[in-house]
Length: 508
Image (cartoon, rainbow, N blue to C red; front, side):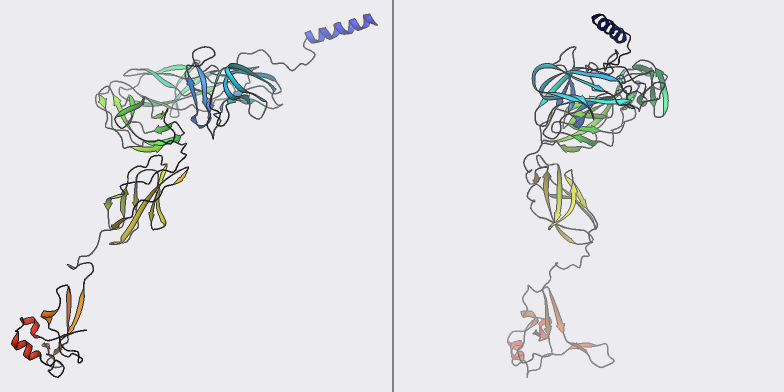
């Protein structure tokens, strides 16, 4: 019996050594994650929610860079990457993390976490893909309101899949000459045969590495490039775009247009604008202070205070100089916890027959404004101007403005009264005092001379003029008879009135 047991044991050992006995362990492979230590200095191809991820140089576990996730009260700063995998295969995900409540895991699958790590601590997750699964999203994130976390040296160990590669990192422009632009980008995840550089829908270069130089360009010409990775299965989606202009410009570029606000967080505001012909770069200003610069047509201004208002302009430049600044855009970071103050200095900037343009001073912490006429909101805007249209000609309106943010709405400003143009002038006051005098009878109530009418009356209607005959155009006013107006003749004798007042009349 002892000998038989030894034989069975030896047979099992041979089966295991020969790979016949199935054991769930990952096959040896290089790290499937692209930019696992963030040493490229960019996040790509990692994507972080809320724009809350960034690459920092301290603290790091190894190398010179690491991931920082600024978890907020409403966003856990999840940073994720999708890679190609093989079905029904075991994988191990590991990563070094630091901070309060840091998580590492697979979307829709296993995860692990640490409630607090004062120094970099390794987390590990093992999982097996499904029978038909060809891709997996791995992630790390913090927890709501628990502050910033860090991650470094992430790894997904196992055989790579043969699906379409992941999206390459957004390219950046390197050396630029009169006729060429050098580009580089972050590597794609998964199996990659090569990369195609596109300008619009046209392939400008095909390479196996993560850089290319586009040559044969015209001097002072603007170009926009994207990159896609490919393998035998197909091609990835295109990366984000980079814009650049060759050198050799002999005139200042025009002012960029289309400046607009994008994503806003507690500490950052994203901006974008249209390319300016002949520009080699752009500078973003807040007032007279330059707050960002680059060769592309977008920028994110970071390190801002929560619930703070900002106004930005952008200018294009090349070797010949800098353009005039664009029109300004205003935005307020999120994180407001108090209602903004009432906007001040509500005023008109233009008045037409059917419209009124209004402006007011910005209110600290406001993310928007409401314009009221009475209790009705007639405009809702994010800036400090509004135009109210569709009004009647020569009509009077009373407007107020309030400021809003996530915490609520301010009190309304004072009422500004405005009258549209197009009024017809009569030469009279808007409110005229009109009287009615009749000269030919008094109804027994005495008489009143026209000269005795107070000067405060603007218009006096005199009645009644009658024709001298039924067919005559000769109109005469008869004086009040002595029977109705006794003593008027004596008054006339003692104090001769002016010519118009000699016609005695009675005011109704």
